[in-house]
Length: 314
Image (tube, rainbow, N blue to C red):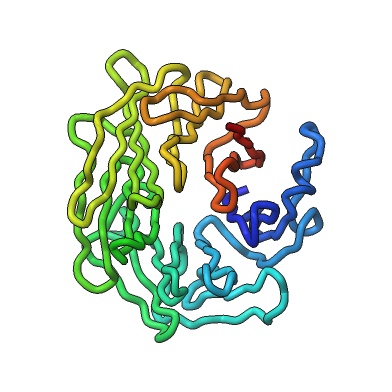
Protein backbone atom coordinates (compact mmCIF):
# COMPACT_ATOMS: atom_id res chain seq x y z
CA UNK A 1 0.00 0.00 0.00
CA UNK A 2 1.44 3.33 -1.10
CA UNK A 3 -1.15 5.91 -0.06
CA UNK A 4 -4.73 6.56 0.99
CA UNK A 5 -7.38 9.28 1.01
CA UNK A 6 -10.76 9.44 2.69
CA UNK A 7 -13.78 9.73 0.42
CA UNK A 8 -17.36 10.74 1.25
CA UNK A 9 -16.74 10.13 4.95
CA UNK A 10 -14.40 8.20 7.20
CA UNK A 11 -16.06 4.88 6.34
CA UNK A 12 -14.81 4.93 2.73
CA UNK A 13 -11.22 4.93 1.51
CA UNK A 14 -9.36 5.31 -1.75
CA UNK A 15 -6.20 3.20 -1.44
CA UNK A 16 -3.17 3.00 -3.73
CA UNK A 17 -2.50 -0.73 -3.49
CA UNK A 18 0.19 -2.33 -5.67
CA UNK A 19 -0.48 -0.67 -9.08
CA UNK A 20 -4.17 0.07 -8.62
CA UNK A 21 -6.39 2.69 -7.03
CA UNK A 22 -9.06 0.83 -5.10
CA UNK A 23 -12.21 2.08 -3.36
CA UNK A 24 -12.69 0.12 -0.13
CA UNK A 25 -15.36 0.23 2.58
CA UNK A 26 -13.45 0.69 5.82
CA UNK A 27 -15.96 -1.31 7.96
CA UNK A 28 -15.11 -4.40 5.90
CA UNK A 29 -11.42 -4.02 6.69
CA UNK A 30 -12.10 -2.98 10.27
CA UNK A 31 -13.90 -6.21 11.11
CA UNK A 32 -11.37 -8.49 9.45
CA UNK A 33 -9.29 -10.59 11.90
CA UNK A 34 -5.89 -9.05 12.67
CA UNK A 35 -4.12 -12.21 11.60
CA UNK A 36 -5.83 -12.30 8.18
CA UNK A 37 -4.01 -10.91 5.16
CA UNK A 38 -6.39 -9.25 2.73
CA UNK A 39 -5.61 -8.54 -0.90
CA UNK A 40 -6.93 -5.29 -2.31
CA UNK A 41 -7.80 -4.78 -5.94
CA UNK A 42 -7.95 -7.36 -8.73
CA UNK A 43 -8.84 -10.03 -7.89
CA UNK A 44 -9.15 -8.99 -4.25
CA UNK A 45 -11.33 -6.77 -2.12
CA UNK A 46 -12.70 -3.38 -3.25
CA UNK A 47 -13.67 -1.62 -6.46
CA UNK A 48 -10.77 -0.95 -8.83
CA UNK A 49 -10.83 2.64 -10.08
CA UNK A 50 -7.55 2.78 -12.03
CA UNK A 51 -4.72 0.46 -13.00
CA UNK A 52 -1.05 0.98 -13.98
CA UNK A 53 -0.69 3.40 -11.07
CA UNK A 54 2.97 3.52 -10.08
CA UNK A 55 4.85 5.27 -7.28
CA UNK A 56 5.34 8.25 -9.58
CA UNK A 57 1.64 8.56 -10.47
CA UNK A 58 0.47 11.28 -8.09
CA UNK A 59 -3.26 11.55 -7.41
CA UNK A 60 -5.61 13.70 -5.35
CA UNK A 61 -9.35 13.96 -4.61
CA UNK A 62 -10.77 17.16 -6.15
CA UNK A 63 -12.85 18.88 -3.40
CA UNK A 64 -15.78 20.23 -5.42
CA UNK A 65 -16.70 17.36 -7.73
CA UNK A 66 -15.23 14.61 -5.47
CA UNK A 67 -13.49 13.15 -8.50
CA UNK A 68 -9.98 11.71 -8.44
CA UNK A 69 -7.32 13.47 -10.51
CA UNK A 70 -4.57 11.02 -11.46
CA UNK A 71 -1.46 12.43 -13.17
CA UNK A 72 -0.28 10.68 -16.33
CA UNK A 73 2.20 11.81 -18.96
CA UNK A 74 0.57 14.70 -20.83
CA UNK A 75 -2.80 14.39 -19.10
CA UNK A 76 -4.88 13.73 -16.01
CA UNK A 77 -7.36 10.92 -15.62
CA UNK A 78 -10.53 12.35 -14.01
CA UNK A 79 -12.27 9.49 -12.21
CA UNK A 80 -15.66 9.39 -10.48
CA UNK A 81 -15.36 6.75 -7.71
CA UNK A 82 -19.15 6.37 -7.62
CA UNK A 83 -19.30 5.52 -11.32
CA UNK A 84 -22.07 8.07 -11.95
CA UNK A 85 -20.04 9.95 -14.57
CA UNK A 86 -17.78 8.43 -17.20
CA UNK A 87 -14.04 8.80 -16.69
CA UNK A 88 -12.45 11.65 -18.61
CA UNK A 89 -8.98 12.67 -19.76
CA UNK A 90 -7.79 16.25 -19.30
CA UNK A 91 -4.88 17.11 -21.58
CA UNK A 92 -2.05 19.20 -20.09
CA UNK A 93 0.70 20.18 -22.51
CA UNK A 94 4.17 19.30 -21.26
CA UNK A 95 3.09 17.37 -18.15
CA UNK A 96 6.06 15.04 -17.67
CA UNK A 97 5.99 11.39 -16.84
CA UNK A 98 6.54 10.93 -13.12
CA UNK A 99 4.73 12.98 -10.45
CA UNK A 100 5.39 12.22 -6.80
CA UNK A 101 2.95 14.43 -4.88
CA UNK A 102 -0.07 16.56 -5.73
CA UNK A 103 -2.48 19.06 -4.24
CA UNK A 104 -5.48 20.82 -5.75
CA UNK A 105 -6.87 24.25 -4.93
CA UNK A 106 -10.44 24.54 -3.52
CA UNK A 107 -11.90 25.46 -6.93
CA UNK A 108 -10.43 22.35 -8.53
CA UNK A 109 -8.87 24.43 -11.31
CA UNK A 110 -5.14 24.26 -10.49
CA UNK A 111 -3.16 21.18 -9.47
CA UNK A 112 0.29 21.50 -7.94
CA UNK A 113 2.70 18.64 -8.61
CA UNK A 114 6.15 17.52 -7.55
CA UNK A 115 8.04 16.25 -10.59
CA UNK A 116 11.60 15.17 -11.39
CA UNK A 117 13.96 17.85 -12.66
CA UNK A 118 17.06 16.53 -14.43
CA UNK A 119 20.13 18.65 -13.67
CA UNK A 120 22.53 16.55 -15.74
CA UNK A 121 22.57 12.91 -16.89
CA UNK A 122 23.90 11.79 -13.48
CA UNK A 123 21.81 13.92 -11.15
CA UNK A 124 18.16 14.83 -10.68
CA UNK A 125 16.05 16.36 -7.94
CA UNK A 126 12.45 17.39 -7.36
CA UNK A 127 10.83 20.49 -8.86
CA UNK A 128 7.33 21.98 -8.70
CA UNK A 129 4.87 22.66 -11.52
CA UNK A 130 1.25 23.81 -11.60
CA UNK A 131 -1.28 22.47 -14.09
CA UNK A 132 -4.17 24.69 -15.18
CA UNK A 133 -7.01 22.30 -15.96
CA UNK A 134 -9.06 24.96 -17.76
CA UNK A 135 -6.38 25.87 -20.30
CA UNK A 136 -4.35 22.66 -20.36
CA UNK A 137 -1.18 24.65 -19.72
CA UNK A 138 1.69 23.84 -17.38
CA UNK A 139 3.35 26.57 -15.29
CA UNK A 140 6.82 25.81 -13.96
CA UNK A 141 8.39 27.27 -10.81
CA UNK A 142 12.08 27.71 -11.58
CA UNK A 143 13.50 28.35 -8.10
CA UNK A 144 12.16 25.42 -6.06
CA UNK A 145 14.39 22.37 -6.06
CA UNK A 146 15.08 19.66 -3.50
CA UNK A 147 16.63 16.24 -3.25
CA UNK A 148 14.10 15.09 -0.65
CA UNK A 149 10.35 14.60 -0.46
CA UNK A 150 8.20 17.71 -0.59
CA UNK A 151 4.75 18.13 0.98
CA UNK A 152 2.15 20.24 -0.84
CA UNK A 153 -0.89 22.03 0.55
CA UNK A 154 -3.12 25.00 -0.10
CA UNK A 155 -3.02 27.83 2.46
CA UNK A 156 -6.53 29.29 2.30
CA UNK A 157 -5.98 32.47 4.41
CA UNK A 158 -3.15 33.65 2.12
CA UNK A 159 -4.47 31.96 -1.04
CA UNK A 160 -1.07 30.51 -1.90
CA UNK A 161 0.47 27.10 -2.16
CA UNK A 162 2.84 25.92 0.55
CA UNK A 163 5.64 23.56 -0.46
CA UNK A 164 7.25 21.98 2.60
CA UNK A 165 10.79 20.60 2.85
CA UNK A 166 10.35 17.40 4.87
CA UNK A 167 14.06 17.10 5.70
CA UNK A 168 14.68 20.57 7.21
CA UNK A 169 11.32 22.10 8.07
CA UNK A 170 11.64 25.10 5.75
CA UNK A 171 9.01 25.94 3.15
CA UNK A 172 8.17 28.00 0.10
CA UNK A 173 5.09 30.07 -0.69
CA UNK A 174 3.94 30.28 -4.28
CA UNK A 175 0.88 31.89 -5.81
CA UNK A 176 1.45 30.25 -9.19
CA UNK A 177 2.56 33.52 -10.80
CA UNK A 178 5.35 35.41 -9.04
CA UNK A 179 8.63 33.71 -8.00
CA UNK A 180 8.28 31.54 -4.91
CA UNK A 181 9.21 33.00 -1.52
CA UNK A 182 11.48 30.88 0.71
CA UNK A 183 10.67 30.78 4.45
CA UNK A 184 13.51 29.63 6.67
CA UNK A 185 13.67 26.39 8.65
CA UNK A 186 14.15 26.50 12.44
CA UNK A 187 17.63 27.66 13.39
CA UNK A 188 20.00 25.88 15.78
CA UNK A 189 18.23 22.53 15.61
CA UNK A 190 19.41 19.81 13.17
CA UNK A 191 15.96 18.75 11.92
CA UNK A 192 15.66 15.19 10.60
CA UNK A 193 11.94 15.07 9.71
CA UNK A 194 9.14 17.59 9.26
CA UNK A 195 5.43 17.56 8.42
CA UNK A 196 3.02 20.32 7.41
CA UNK A 197 -0.68 20.74 8.16
CA UNK A 198 -3.44 23.23 7.53
CA UNK A 199 -5.20 24.46 10.67
CA UNK A 200 -7.57 27.28 11.69
CA UNK A 201 -4.46 29.32 12.56
CA UNK A 202 -2.85 28.70 9.19
CA UNK A 203 -0.18 26.29 7.99
CA UNK A 204 1.61 24.62 10.91
CA UNK A 205 5.09 23.08 10.69
CA UNK A 206 6.14 20.21 12.98
CA UNK A 207 9.89 19.53 12.91
CA UNK A 208 11.71 16.76 14.78
CA UNK A 209 15.33 16.83 15.90
CA UNK A 210 17.57 14.84 18.26
CA UNK A 211 18.71 16.34 21.56
CA UNK A 212 22.31 15.88 22.74
CA UNK A 213 20.90 13.47 25.33
CA UNK A 214 19.48 11.31 22.55
CA UNK A 215 15.89 12.31 23.26
CA UNK A 216 13.64 13.54 20.46
CA UNK A 217 12.80 17.24 20.34
CA UNK A 218 9.86 18.89 18.58
CA UNK A 219 9.76 22.47 17.38
CA UNK A 220 6.58 23.83 15.83
CA UNK A 221 5.86 26.94 13.84
CA UNK A 222 3.04 28.90 12.20
CA UNK A 223 3.66 30.12 8.67
CA UNK A 224 2.98 33.83 8.17
CA UNK A 225 3.07 35.41 4.74
CA UNK A 226 6.84 35.98 4.74
CA UNK A 227 8.18 34.16 7.82
CA UNK A 228 7.53 31.32 10.25
CA UNK A 229 6.86 32.07 13.90
CA UNK A 230 8.60 29.26 15.79
CA UNK A 231 7.73 28.17 19.34
CA UNK A 232 10.37 27.05 21.87
CA UNK A 233 11.25 23.37 21.35
CA UNK A 234 9.88 20.69 23.65
CA UNK A 235 11.30 17.28 24.55
CA UNK A 236 9.32 14.15 23.65
CA UNK A 237 10.25 11.59 26.34
CA UNK A 238 10.00 7.89 25.62
CA UNK A 239 10.79 5.98 22.44
CA UNK A 240 12.47 8.01 19.63
CA UNK A 241 9.80 9.67 17.47
CA UNK A 242 9.97 9.15 13.70
CA UNK A 243 6.85 11.08 12.63
CA UNK A 244 4.94 13.89 14.36
CA UNK A 245 1.82 15.18 12.59
CA UNK A 246 -0.35 17.99 13.93
CA UNK A 247 -4.11 17.61 14.16
CA UNK A 248 -5.93 19.76 11.55
CA UNK A 249 -8.05 21.61 14.16
CA UNK A 250 -6.65 20.81 17.62
CA UNK A 251 -3.28 21.53 19.24
CA UNK A 252 -2.20 17.92 19.52
CA UNK A 253 0.18 15.71 17.61
CA UNK A 254 0.04 12.12 16.42
CA UNK A 255 3.46 10.53 16.82
CA UNK A 256 4.96 7.31 15.50
CA UNK A 257 7.76 6.18 17.82
CA UNK A 258 10.14 3.27 17.39
CA UNK A 259 12.99 1.59 19.19
CA UNK A 260 14.36 -1.58 17.64
CA UNK A 261 11.36 -3.50 16.31
CA UNK A 262 8.95 -2.00 18.84
CA UNK A 263 6.61 0.72 17.58
CA UNK A 264 4.11 2.93 19.37
CA UNK A 265 1.38 5.28 18.16
CA UNK A 266 1.11 8.25 20.53
CA UNK A 267 -0.90 11.43 20.87
CA UNK A 268 0.88 14.35 22.58
CA UNK A 269 0.00 17.89 23.63
CA UNK A 270 1.89 21.14 23.08
CA UNK A 271 4.19 20.38 26.04
CA UNK A 272 5.12 16.97 24.61
CA UNK A 273 3.09 15.10 27.23
CA UNK A 274 1.64 11.76 26.12
CA UNK A 275 -2.16 11.91 26.18
CA UNK A 276 -2.67 8.42 24.77
CA UNK A 277 -0.51 5.63 23.41
CA UNK A 278 -0.76 2.12 22.09
CA UNK A 279 1.81 -0.46 21.02
CA UNK A 280 1.76 -1.64 17.42
CA UNK A 281 1.14 -5.36 17.13
CA UNK A 282 4.39 -7.37 16.66
CA UNK A 283 5.04 -8.17 13.01
CA UNK A 284 3.25 -5.03 11.79
CA UNK A 285 5.39 -2.12 10.59
CA UNK A 286 3.97 1.39 10.18
CA UNK A 287 5.64 4.33 8.43
CA UNK A 288 3.03 7.10 8.37
CA UNK A 289 0.13 8.65 10.29
CA UNK A 290 -2.74 10.69 8.89
CA UNK A 291 -5.48 12.51 10.81
CA UNK A 292 -9.01 12.02 9.50
CA UNK A 293 -10.64 15.08 7.96
CA UNK A 294 -14.11 13.75 8.79
CA UNK A 295 -13.67 12.79 12.45
CA UNK A 296 -11.57 14.76 14.95
CA UNK A 297 -10.82 11.60 16.95
CA UNK A 298 -9.81 9.27 14.13
CA UNK A 299 -6.22 8.60 13.11
CA UNK A 300 -5.18 6.49 10.13
CA UNK A 301 -2.00 4.42 10.59
CA UNK A 302 -0.38 2.92 7.50
CA UNK A 303 2.54 0.87 6.29
CA UNK A 304 3.45 -0.98 3.11
CA UNK A 305 1.47 -4.03 4.28
CA UNK A 306 -0.63 -2.56 7.08
CA UNK A 307 -3.62 -0.30 7.55
CA UNK A 308 -5.16 0.49 10.92
CA UNK A 309 -6.94 3.21 12.85
CA UNK A 310 -6.65 4.64 16.32
CA UNK A 311 -9.81 6.14 17.83
CA UNK A 312 -9.45 8.65 20.64
CA UNK A 313 -11.92 9.21 23.44
CA UNK A 314 -11.93 12.21 25.73
